[in-house]
Length: 514
Ligand code: ZN
Image (cartoon, rainbow, N blue to C red; front, side, top):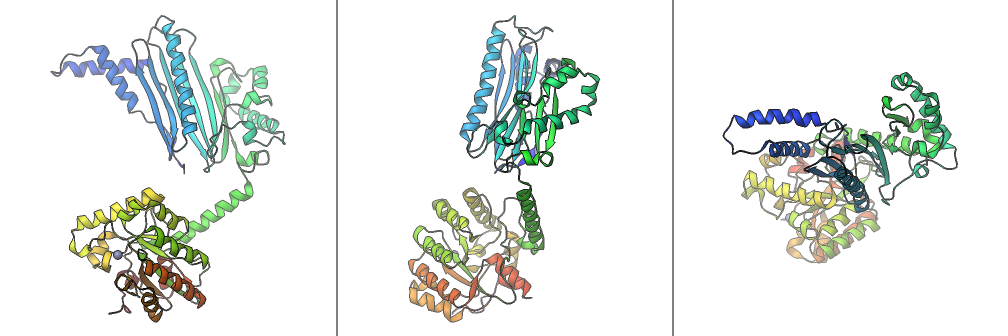
């Protein structure tokens, strides 16, 4: 997923900056006893360091690569986007930038190695990323080139990609070709530019009209943002050179009937906004300790569950994941439209990431059961934190989110340890001791003898007998009209019923067998 986190304009490198920087460095250098380095080398290092630490605008899921080159005869600073998991897009963007760099070097080598003002030839290529949902990514690429051979060049090019197919998109992929979208764009753009004072004070009517006429070549430079399409007009296109370049943003609302519905569908957008605000309201209503931070799994909502009148049981499975037995339980849950919670061990997540993904993708809940099943009462606070963090990290790397629930190994927990963990530490109310018997019938009977409305059942999905018993328990409980819920749901149900949630998540082994 790509989310916009920062978009920042980049200043074009200027030679005067390099020169003033160099004066400063020379002073510093003379004042200490460092070995002699020629000023030219110092400039290079300073300049390179400055270029390497420049801020590049980015999105979640978009890193950047760079080409920073101090050559005998020119300066090159070029960055290109690297889209995680999208090799085609990345290599096309890198190829575009590398090509520009290569032809610039060739051009410089044919000249006198000096710009018109006597400075070093320089090339700067920077970009800004834009994203629409998880569907379209766009890049506005700004190039500044002063080779000393041809005149100084400063222009914008754009790239718009379908994120799924990684195919470059044209106007016709964004706008509905059955509509006269060019006339609409042209009208809207002209309206906006009529209010632009820079353009109006440099107005050349015929240039303006030809440059904004409803023809595709006038609107090739565009990006698709979250709720807008931005068009760019380079120097000379719509106004005399002195006026520079222009950009015009048109909102989806103004374009809605000429955009393809997969780009913007007002009904779908309204529905998405409504469901996002419903989700935010549900999240806000959660008890504090079930609220999630960025990167955390979300607590399950009580959708379709009547906490006061439904009969509910939460099945929990510890010590997995385990390929065959966990899958058997997942299959039975799915068949009966039931959910459960899996408290997994970090080391087994690393061994069986695929099973963890299956648990997650099947819509069941995942909790943290430590990394390698150490007794929290026997280890230091620091080691407890390591057990929790390593497991969270393993889960995060596998499914992209961290669990919000913890079950301490052996159920060993104190208030101090629970405070240290800072997450709900979930125990159980029914314990068939399946790890001891490893017998399908005994496990099944031990659950069914004690289980009732509001119970949390502890089982282990690493034993064949436990899995077989669990399949029967799932079937029998749903037949008896129980809803099988997750732990985060059970906590909310208990709260709605006025029970002390602190007891559920700390110590409530009232029906544990001796
Ligand atoms: Zn365990």
